[in-house]
Amino acid sequence: MARQEKKKDVVIVGLGWTGSIAGIELAQEGLEIVALERGHDQSVVPNFQYPNQIDELKYGVRLKNFQHPRMQTVTVRRNEAETALPYRSLGSFLPGNGVGGAGTHWNGLNWRPQEQELSLRSYVRDNWGEQIIPDDMVLQDYPVTYDEMEPFFTRFEKVAGISGKAGNIKGQIQEGGNPFEGWRSEEYPMPALPTTYDASLFEKAAKAAGLHPFPAPAGIASQAYTNPYGMQMGPCNFCGFCERYGCYQYSKSMPQTCTLDALKAYPNFSYRTGAEVLRVEMAQDGKTATGVTYYDYATKEEVFQPADIVILASYQLNNVHLMLLSGIGQPYNAVTGEGVTGKNYAYQMNGGVTLFFKDANFNPFVGHGANGIAIDDYSISQIDFGKEGFIGGAYWRAGTFNGQPIRSMPLPKGTASWGGKWKEAIGEWYGHAMSIGTHGSHMSYKTNHLDLDPTYTDPHGRPLMRMTFNWNPNDLRMNQFQKRKAEELAKTMGANITDIGFKDVGAQYDVRPYQTTHNTGGHIMSDSPTTGAVNKFSQAWDKHNVFAMGAGNFVQNTQYNPTGLVGGLAYHTVHAIRTQYLSNPRPLV
Image (cartoon, rainbow, N blue to C red; front, side, top):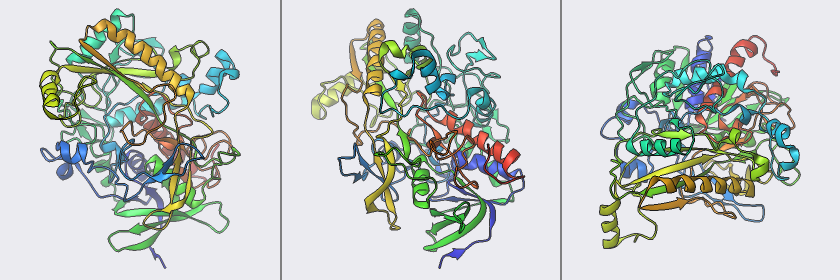
């Protein structure tokens, strides 16, 4: 018999970006709220304080800030014919662990999607016809428009303290910004940060080629800043320890610097760590949730936490797993195409060019996670899909973001991987390399999905979630298009050596090397219960008091880092709960 806690108005599963946003906004309504976090508690001090956090071996290589596979993992296969095996060693993606979640260890790149990305199927249909959509692609419009979302993007940018230069304010193109971005109601909360030497070389080459460079939008403070919750940030010192680390400087946008301390000040909010939610419990009629059951690692027992509203705000993979285990939405069947939960799993399609200059010193130890100059000239809104033979696009960025010598030691292809020749090459090339990265969209396909594994279980006896995923020809063609364009620009920059790193046509997904922690889909938004798991307000179609937030809502992945869209959707969801649901709990339309 599980121990039972006192009933709350709201229980939140996970206390990262979306969980803390939901908590603070709903606490303002006077609701009694509890958040359950599987991992440990962590704050800037003492957990991220200087100099302890800037330990590359501990955090950059041994990954001590991340969810270890022994705690929770997935099984992985490329197609239905393969037998899925457990993801036993962190590689391709790195889910966060503890209070703050993945929001503590990201690089800070904060983008809004382009207007066309939120209505991509309609955009393709209206410009080229639906006949160019591959048969296996599940291309959908979001049930929200850019115009609907703009106030919520703005709200998140103010709370997160984003630095940048607007390119489009109320339809007026702004010099120095991104001319291809969606319209903004106002300028960024903070001005753009200065950039490094490599970024200036890229900017010069891009301008000479007739492209449109602009500062990358950064969840990194360029000056002292106080956000709408009264949380303070300090200007970045370009230490280069962003990705895989918490920020000791109070400069990176993360829940610890933007939301959590303000949330903890509410007497009607509490949170418990070491509390792993096992399932969402349902009423006898199956139409609503009654709360959640979690495992308390301190007392080593199951606990039932009753609540009127359940908000799933854990990482995308964990949210989908919980929904599959709890019977929220019909599980997706890739063979029949029926079902919604686990559907449209998508990832990201990246590539890059590394340039080596014997006579240039880039001081790679100076930088931050979102440093650099970007271009959007080869983004979704700028490509003729009919002519090029694919649907998708990418942004490019150049700028030093970490010069940590263990993980970031670019050497020319063909260099010895150990011994005297390797040491010789380090002496010759460290500090003399720069890169241009392309960060591309990834479409959703009938074959790429998430379900429960029939063989493997977790420490609680629950089936692991199974990931079926592989690269598809459309996205590989897009990647090759970006490769050709990047090679053309790189040739103009005068490097002594240029190395190209793009996936070849026919490439297979490899779970071992790190690629990105941009896992999306699985509980996608839709305008119909037959095509998605949640509605436009992130409300489960079949359980009206369950809301699932985060990148699992993405119908296909955009060309950008997901946090800006995740944050905007979180504010969109809590606004609907506050203004529509609380006064009359029901399915929202």
